[in-house]
Image: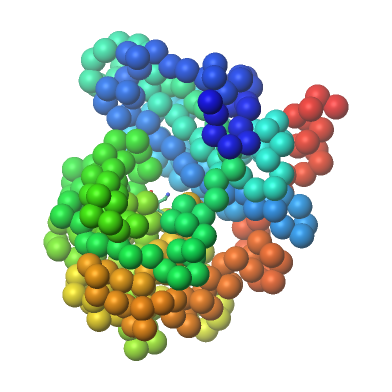
Length: 319
Ligand code: PMP
């Protein structure tokens, strides 16, 4: 079995069949969570297949590895090319989700990895539709505040996108689903809003757009950054500030941002309707600006759309 549309995975320098991209059960990462990874989307645009903010994602990948002192063994720009090659090798030119991962592999069983502990690197890609459902993008989703808090700043660094962080995410997300919600929002250890299990949160009240700052135990999302910049272009300011839980209940609009979730409206929190109980006008405006980047209606003035061009196609096919 493979994920939709996927046949080949790049692993440690080679394209290998999906079912051959395996690891030893004693791999360090499996026991201790020592992996860093990215989630990146490619979109079919009128100008061909484009990967959204690929360089920024791969910079965050390298940064996550730096935080954990993990030698990736490849340059950022080499891995950028690998992401493009994986798209071409799997013929995912109509859109894709790309998952690069680096992890401490099979070596010494001790917790503190030695300098020569092997690090494996892989890039997979497949077709992945709307993470919180296509209907959620239009109607909004129902979410709850999780009984699980986010990791405290001096425990596990939230700004690193590391495998181990997602134990927290799994608790938040599975609790929410068990209770019948699409997603859970966690509080940070000071009790203010942090983020969803795999999404950043934006809150709109009386025309003001707010989002928790990096100090609220969030992953500083690239979709979050995109929305902040798109809003500025449209003359709207996003304020990064601590947000109390009850401000969610009284908000006019709330939405999530994330590579998987894209820009998804939230229509209720803990069964309290937000505003009119469906997608609000500011959310719609920002959603249109975001998806407009891929339909060509929003100008890509920051160079966020990175081409999977003919050269890439030729190189991957050996032509
Ligand atoms: N927070 C968490 C915990 C996430 O896993 C993600 C998804 N990578 C995000 C926020 C959103 O980040 P981005 O917009 O870069 O995908």
